[in-house]
Image 1: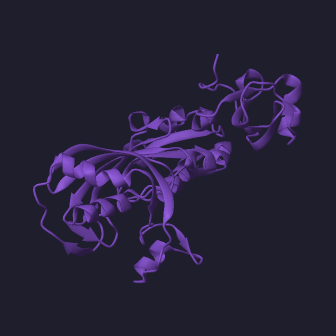
Image 2 (image 1 turned 45 degrees about the vertical axis):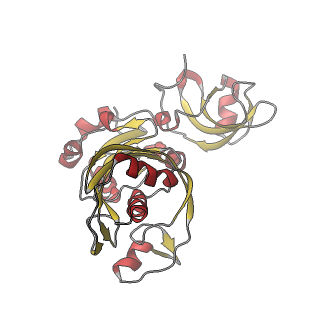
Image 3 (image 1 turned 90 degrees about the vertical axis):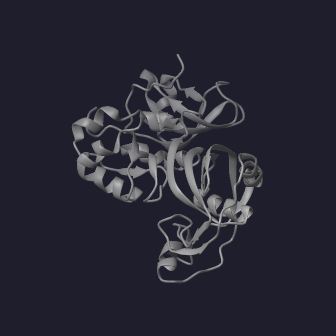
Length: 305
């Protein structure tokens, strides 16, 4: 993979580093003009962190919208200020002999479209400051509940006082808040003991670059793992422009694309399977630019034959 190419590097983030620190490390390793991540992971958490390189950084908003899957080990019987075991213990309680049915019944109200209060130890903004900055200063403020989507919670294992859950959820969901809510529903408290993000949209942990390779920082071992930019938006339907339409579209004009897709967001291609960016299909079969990737290259693996 040539330096300067755009794409997605799917990293299996290690424990004890922030998502920003991963990006900072890669900025020192890879000769790319722009690098950013596609969704923050807590420092203590591990797992899938999609890193966007070059023109692919323009796709960050669409990557944020992808669903996520987590494997969370939750310690029951303990309440902390951070809602995980890295924080200060606020309360402890004995945990009775809970069954799998007990856990599943307590999880049921936590699925679907729910209102969730962001943790104080989070990156949410409050009057120009991050909540975690206020929390570290000993300040607690009222936080408005946010609507989030939790598609499913599956009990993977139960060994009281710990329970392992597989959680599939949408953007903005805090697994630590789910752990605290589960503990509250069971009447004993709960906090995240271990958290692994196993998937972000199409990107799975099995296919991620192992953390030691990123930590060691050798560019020649990382470039070959770079995926085409359009893999970040593979769920969107494709639209292919003809030769006469490509340049006008790249110059910001809507063009005729026919009935290739229904109205809504699409990924747009030009000749030679070159990924051009994100468009929006309009009534009458026209597509207008939403996000243009000027420097992307041919070679996508997600354009239908």
